Length: 340
Image 1 (cartoon, rainbow, N blue to C red):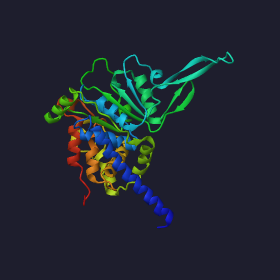
Image 2 (cartoon, helix red, strand yellow):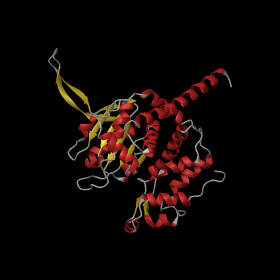
Image 3 (cartoon, rainbow, N blue to C red):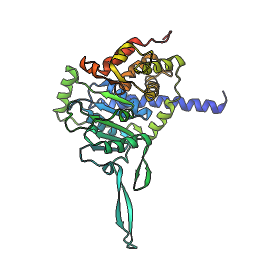
Image 4 (cartoon, rainbow, N blue to C red):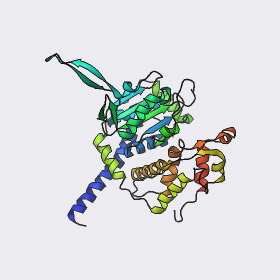
């Protein structure tokens, strides 16, 4: 190894140490106000460190919005919250051209006023309350990291991270995201009710005069560096093959699909699920101080990656079989590679 390679290796090691320390500091700061929800926090950080986007599903009052707002306070990033409503138009989030008069020349010129998408962290609150046209404008920005207005294309700031929330129990007046748009989200993270002890801690803290002060511990430049270094994590071929087989096992059209898939699933996960499963597992491994992906990483992220990509049929609904149940059965059915 020559001197240049040694310097590159040292720089990489320092960056990995910074990522691990950054993750611990972020969690430490979040713990000042967020109680429990360990898996949720880990999954949000994995998406952030890989450049993915999250859909967070949960009933009202589980601190979905609080978690995202607190994360934005901890990170040295620009934050915008968009409350999605039935009358929200695409221009309300992307920006709009206005006519402005030049005071020196008296001429009228078109000036672009950027919308709330021109930030680093976007909280898309109750995304299923806005019409498909506005949903599509957001999802295009998520995919391309740019928007088009008045015939001009504008590049969004980096890093660009969208966390969308939706309420699963109020269906009246909502516009559920189509499967093709759901596929744009790396994870569908489910927030559930807290255990009794955690709920007692939340009630005690939120009814007192306690006000948390946060330190900004990670910058946008750090996150962009983390996103690059994560892609260098090694993945054994057998582990990658296991991830692909797990995803392919959800497709009812495959002759080798398990019988329960053919019985209960209309449509399974696509190639993007395999990519996100591997990329997320690379981040999870590195965040836990390991430099190669394990089967445990794949299994830990199977639910958030697959739960919104498996479309069940009428028979599953009549038997009250959810995508969560199907993922559990897949994890039990798909054989792990030998030696893992």
